[in-house]
Image (cartoon, rainbow, N blue to C red; front, top):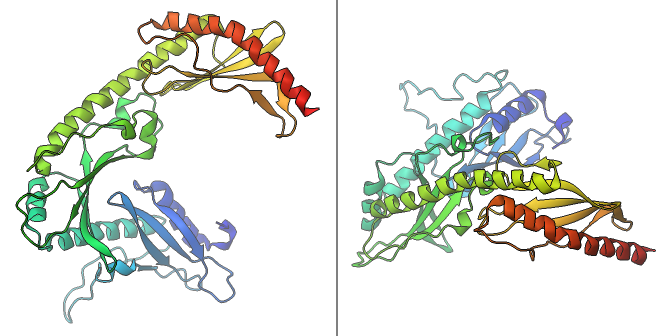
Length: 378
């Protein structure tokens, strides 16, 4: 976005919202409300909610920047009235717009957070009004769990269904990884989707289940490779969640322990290859070493999978002397090498030694490949 075309008061509040909110709020688009388009004073926010995004338009007025903004909600939420007008004679409840101070950079953040909390209560009320006995039972069994978000989805051309975002595990994932630079608190959720049924079913089908995590967590643990436990006949969510959390906690602790295993392997590589030029100090997923064969110098890139040592590292060689003249002088690299001797039962020193022995001959093949590429480029 063109910063110089956004009124400073609006820009300050928007930047504070984007950098200080615990939610990963994004700006989808910005536009001008004036005829000459001199200033961008309106924007669409993408606000995380129930493992999806809700879109709200925030409408400032560049001609009167001291005034608070209007917020326009999505067409499916036309009954959402967060700040209803009180009856005549009633004292109006205070909210984030009551004492708006345009010079306070926190005001937009406070407004959006308050609206999100009210929206969460609004959706909970909608779900509670659904005439579905199974849903009412499930809500009652999960009522004691904190942080559950729910969303009632309905429309002309789509079936009614209720979505739940159930936070899992009470452990602080950020503190479990020493030195992590995660800005947001890492979370794992179970998405549960129930179709709305307005008639009694003797044996209801299992809900649709999906495990979802913060994107940054994939550096530590692969949600996609986690196998959800089976949903047994007649089961309810209160029975399902303890088993799921027990399995999940065990695998996450294993994932944290595997960081140290990868660290020891990278340390062992330093014996035949020397000190690494660079290495991932937190998750120990990557390391690069400088090697040579005679006068031919090259880099050795190691990428360690989460399942190390069950799965072997991917190795790529990169010449420091040969370049692609038709690709911006990019250095020539080998294909991924994984046909070297490997056994997860070896100790890390033997793993490093066998890779080093393998590269003695493989680097000559790579040097030959580099020379052939140069000949083809002439």
